[in-house]
Image 1 (cartoon, one colour):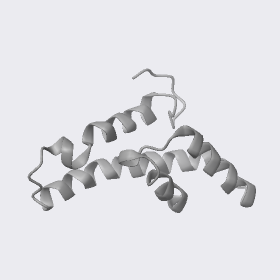
Image 2 (tube, helix red, strand yellow):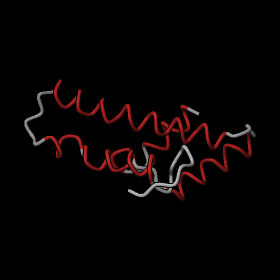
Image 3 (cartoon, helix red, strand yellow):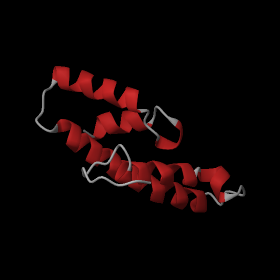
Length: 100
């Protein structure tokens, strides 16, 4: 699941994975290698990757001593919105109904 998720996060801006692309990737993977509950596992892995990237981009921004404003250097707001959408929106990996 890690490789699939890593590839998926490279598709969109700031790690955002368009839902049609995600669905296509899952279908293609499952056609070759059927794994029970793989969609749930992959979504949890995507949330893990998204959360890790939130921390990593800020660390890297600081490490590089990037002179740009933090948003310009990291797109942290977009990354945070993606994580919230995964936790509380239609991508809710835990199945709980919430609203953003």
